[in-house]
Amino acid sequence: MEPVRVLQIVTIMNRGGLETMLMNYYRQMDRSRIQFDFMVHRAEPGHYDEEIISLGGRIYRMPQIRPGNYRHYFKLLDQFFTEHPEYRIVHSHINENSSFVLRAAKRAGVPCRIAHSHLSDLGLDLKLPFRLYARMAMKDNPNQFFACSSHAGQWLFGKELTAAKRVTVLNNAVHVDSFKYDPEVRRRIRDEWQAGSRLVLGHVGRFNKQKNHTFLLDVFRAVHERRPDSLLVLAGEGVLRKDMEKKATQLGLSDSIRFLGVREDIPELMQGMDLFLFPSLFEGLPVVLVEAQAAGLNCIVSDAITKESDVTGRVQFISLKEPADVWAARIATTSCEHQDTAELLRAGGYDTGTMTRWLADYYLDHAL
Image (tube, rainbow, N blue to C red):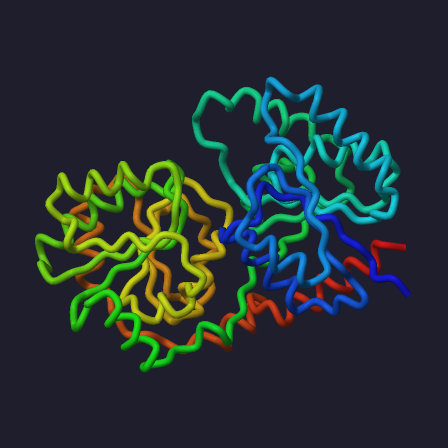
C-alpha cells in the first residue's frame, strides 16, 4: 500500500521551533504508512529541504502571502489542489493565513483540514488589518483545530470553539534524549565560547521584534554590571541581528556577547549555558523553551508567555513592565544547576516519541 501523504503548510523549512518540531515528528514517523510533503511560501531553499527530499518528501513552492497578491495566490491554490487530488489531509501551520489554504482545500473536497495555531498574538505592524481579516475568514474552512496551548487555540479560533472542546492541544514536543546532560559536551561547548567558569546566559530565536532582543541586551547590561565575567550567547539569524550587534558595541559589551548565527547543534549549545532567557513580546508555546527545560536549564521568561510552558517547574515569569535591573536581580538569585527533567517531560506528553505515535494514529484515522 502507498503511504498516506500529509501536506504540511509552512512558511519556510528553516531551523525555527515549529519547523524543528515537524522534522522531529517526520524523522520518527513510520514513513511506509505516513509521508509528509510540504507547501512552503518562500522561493529560497530552507535549511531542512535536502533532508526532506532524502526522507521521501516533496516540496511545493508558493509565493509569499501578501495583501497585494491575494487574487493571484488564491488562483494558484485552487490550481494546486486541482492538480493534486491525492491529499486527504492538509495540516496548516501558518496561523491566520491557514484560512486561505484550507478554503481552497475545502473547495477541492479534502476531507481532513487541520488549522494549527502556534501564536497567541499578532503584534502591531502595517499588516495587522489584513491579518485580522485572514483570522475572521477562518470560519468553517478547517474542520480540525490544533493549538500549541489552550491560549493559542482561543486566540485563533475563539472562545466558542475552545469552550466546546473542539480544539486539540498538541504539545510542542522535543526529542528529549538528545538534550540529556553530558559534562564532556558542556566542556567542549564552553571551550568554543572561551567561557571558562563565567556565568553564561543563553537565548535561541530569530532576530525579530517578537523576540525582544533589544530588552534582552538591556537585561544583560544590568547583569554584567553585577557580574563582569558574565557572557551572553545568542543563536539565530534575522533582520535585526545587525542592529543588535551595533547595540552591543554601543553598550561596550561586544567582547561579552557571542552571536552564533543559525546552528544545528542546539541541544549541545544548551549544555554549555547556565540559564536560559526568553523575554518575548508574545508567543504561542515556544518549542525552544521546552528544549531548554529538556536540557535541565532554569529559564527566566516574560509573562507574555503562557504559564502552560512551565512543564518542569523550572520556568520563572517576570513582567516586561519591570525594568532590566529587576530581571538582573532574579538572574542573580537563580540556581545554575542542571536537572534531569526527562521523565517530567515524558509524563507531560512533551517527548516526540510518544507524540509521534499519537499523531500517526490521528492521521490514519482521519485519512479514511
